[in-house]
Image 1 (cartoon, rainbow, N blue to C red):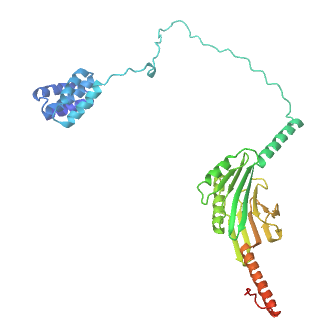
Image 2 (image 1 turned 180 degrees about the horizontal axis):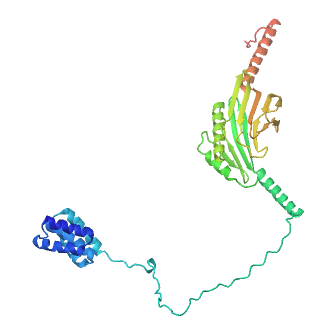
Image 3 (image 1 turned 180 degrees about the vertical axis):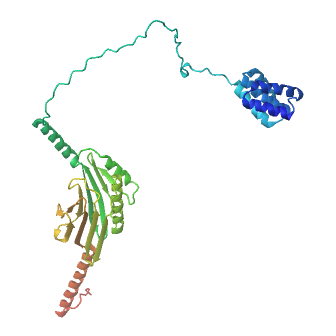
Length: 363
């Protein structure tokens, strides 16, 4: 039995389905389907019937094999049954190519005719254009006018001004003024405002006319103001696709009781910015009335409405130093009270030297 089953398996592997069935049919009569050998024999017969196209016999035997004792054969039988019972799909006509029937009847006594193409006349040559001439003066004027218009329109599209106000000892108030000279809000303004929303301390945003953005902070100490300025410049650079070095802001103060001597130092590295027009970046510091105490480079600062206006140079490192004296109201008030006490003491001593005693209440 084992030899016959092996020969049937070899015939099935060769594709000889008839020989496989002839070897398996005697074995199937001696081994019923409820035996393991009988179930295996019928599984091979199902495969051979599928190869011969006898799907009905294969389907009926597969249904019997789905109830055999061997779990592996049951699974294989169900899989084959699903394949056999699947509906057949029609092959679309466009998937195949049909060749027309060719008439192969020979013609004797006649020579094949050769088709000759009719030669077309050559196309006429293009008309001569003459030598290349320079553009006229009118064309050059139009191009020049367009370029000048674009320069005026795009050259000064935005102006950025940062204000620093010394509102008291160790107190700075900062603000940004971004003005679009085109009269419409630029996408960079919206991106910069959105980038500052999660910044601490917060900025107070106010909208002026169309294209004008104002951002103001509350009064801060020097360290907090320096960190806020550095973070704001970094975010402004990121929204513009630049990597700007952080600016350096320091304020050194010396208290003389009646006033405070302040020394403000500001450094800005703008070597990464070279495409903006002049006077597009400004820093305004106030209040200030004396330029002799201001040292700035590479562009000198100027006075405007009691404020120090400092234009920043692009592609360079900008440095400003300002020394300022600020009177202290508390110190001046204390000094005035001390002066009044001294005057009162002096008058009292003069009164006593003239023979008058201390004032007394009437008895």
